[in-house]
Image 1 (spheres, rainbow, N blue to C red):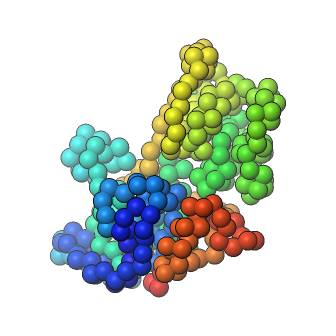
Image 2 (cartoon, rainbow, N blue to C red):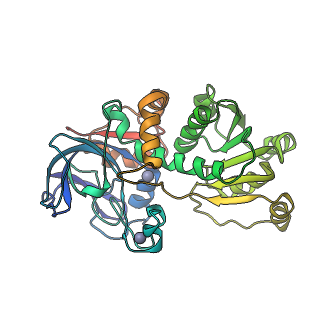
Length: 355
Ligand SMILES: [Zn+2]
Ligand SMILES: [Zn+2]
């Protein structure tokens, strides 16, 4: 089959590789759509791969072609999304069905071959069958949407205080999903989005009040207006500055959820630490999402939301679909923070396969 293979740091190529071998507990999946995650850029160019050669890609949907002899309940042509985390099923977290915090997990697209390929062999446990209501183009967005669903659920469940004033920092892909989801989860709450980029704020205008923070001067004015203001804050930007500011924005006894991945050093001023104490802020971390093939979970909530109002509202943020062959060049463009198409936003790049 054809796949995008990361051969060494910075070198990803379209190559012909052997077809996947399907184990007894796996299905063979024809990849339909796959989305590019910012972690794929780091994995490709920033030395973020565990080994080479690797086929990346962990935001994937497709259809079932065949299965091993231990697998039951699938039919040829079933549309599925792939939960990329393979839990150990043995640790205390797994016993509590909190697979997202498994102590010894494996992962499609980073620790084993992923979906930037024509086919994938995937454990049946990791396949979520999709309802007809979810369009093919939306199915590969379930993974990233469920990451946001998880962070919102963690923040909202952490306090009995009514979430009436809520804020999201960072208007990238995750932040854009967050403001849209917040609007449907908390229709009476006032949602505010902060970003330093006016064009990202523009994309969220229908879903949140927006505040532009391009520099320190703007921040001084904003912090005067909003310090200790929000009952719930989500930091989806994951920079040292955004994390510091998130502490300022959070109200007394408020909940601050960090979901952005920090890639720089964070040195907290003792005055800010004192704020955490004096305001009795709860800081929550959020990682990945809950998944259960047979019960309620963040993944099902993401599917439901995308099937209804979610996908139409996210579609304007997507790139025009690319082919797998275009992926290596596209990753270069994304690394250089250039645009694929001058007039189109590209908060999420989607690869359309042939399924
Ligand atoms: Zn991702
Ligand atoms: Zn485990």
